Length: 124
Image 1 (cartoon, one colour):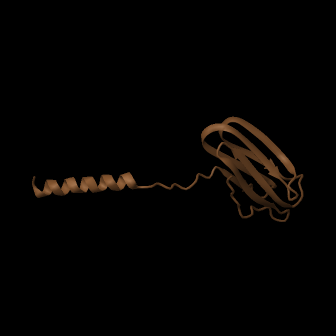
Image 2 (cartoon, helix red, strand yellow):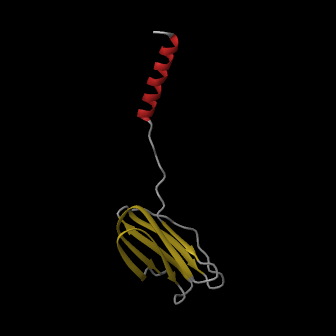
Image 3 (cartoon, one colour):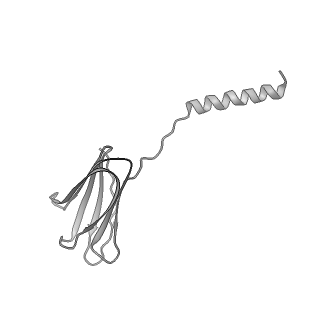
């Protein structure tokens, strides 16, 4: 065997063994996002998943009381505008439950300047 052929064969064996032991750690897909509609008291809840399934959306107030709930069957994505106009100023918890577990995002309703608070994502 010629040295060039031997070298190419060795490279092939090394690359095959490295790819066999490679571990992929993809970041978990973010499938819940809550964004404010500028200048309003409306927030858009955006959901997207790779496969369709049952999804439940819950919104709780500061006292952990359920103020909004909606279920979706056989869906892989949606955008739901939710008006907070009738609710008091404070922190609200948006909870989404699907086949992958529970995702939670906190929003802050501030009458002076409606804005999104720091997001807290929890997966159970």
